[in-house]
Length: 638
Image (cartoon, rainbow, N blue to C red; front, side, top):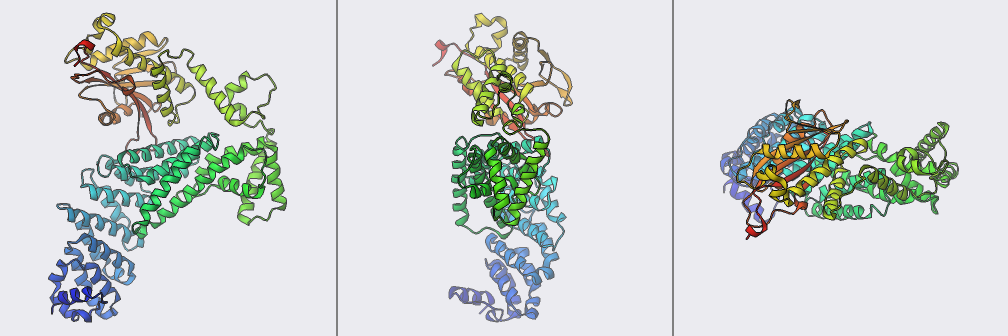
């Protein structure tokens, strides 16, 4: 019997396989072509790995040949796993196998070749992790991946690229992942891995504004992963985790964050169920540990928000342990102090405001039987409180005037905010800010709802605050009114300026001229210019300045429905004007559709979009709007 026949017979009887069982080394070599064509490369690798060194070494070239011509993807991947787990075999054959992997990575003619290419790249990456090949070999292959490679290969590349970034931190990996966002099948995986990368960088940061901007960018990418793939429970969990962290930093109450926590728990359970149904590759196993540590931390964060809202605790020792865990806030996804920087201010402010919490800390420091690690964290908190006290702060008043300036302005002189609940102060401050920025609210309740929704979505931008928020909102309100008016106004009301909305082939310049005149007349004191050169090496459609920040409106004429998916092709151009400006702007389109029914509702004509440029770490934000053209009177509709 041939070596292959002997192998198949032993497999049919579930018997172990040795070199002697197949007739010896010579018989195996004689039957090499038939063995190569079989789906048993992993079994042959196991057999050679377990053989005595002398016999096994004689078959190393045979095994290299098997990797070179294998056609069964699963046995090829399993053989790589067996090969990498045997250090002696790895050292003896690595260079020859690397050359084979490098060749096979570029072969995508068939579905089988595509999978083998993906597993070859995985094998090359794992060999670099083991130190048998320079990391520059897989980095070079990853950096050269084009966005139009087959979907299954692109999905594997995105996952490997993300793992490689966390291992080596190379910027070209982020550039590659950003390119893969353009691959429909790999978009979800690429967005998730980019989200993890930006999350890690944010938490490694030291500057608070950059940390918050990085968290916002990571959340945006996790959101994109969810939109690309409804089954991305991992992306949903991380999105919710970031919301909990940012909610804690913004003094949101535990009750306010309960729905977000529920979303996190649900997504984490779904993710765990998915992982239990299959085997996780060893090189991805550490990522599971990161998930567990990260999600456990944010669950504690939500409980800590409730603890910090109380003046004292019944079970002080247990509660203090939770607070100190948040105050220390370390997780394996990052090694910097970014998480501590985000979470510590609220904890310190609560201990300064509530005398009972500071008393608990002092009591436990003097009497508590804490492990050394926890005692060190507690001493760090106590030292920080002493520093603030020495700087002149008093309990109950630290930072509150700075955090709630409008509320502090209207309180009687000498009035303390110590007895006002933090949730109430936050709501009052938000209401005062809204009143100050928008003295003249829109009368139309639908427009009010659209405006409120857009403002809420813009809150993801770290620049949407203070004067920038007020001026941007002023422009946004006028654009909303413009969109509504151009759907409602009769041609007799608009005159010649509205003719373009009803003709078959208007120009983009018609919309530009109409919108410029509208904004110029309604934004008192604003500078509204068209065709301004020297911005992002190009020329703007509309340039708006209200004495401080400037905002750019990019306009398009679009044949067909202008949907969020369609608008995505223009995001890079529209956000390019934000390179040396605030990261807020507008994208508008004159939508030309021959409709037999009515134009879209105003709520369907404006939406928020965000974009992270290739190689960038900060999200840029746009309000996108469409102005329907080729309008017909109601009597002309069918």
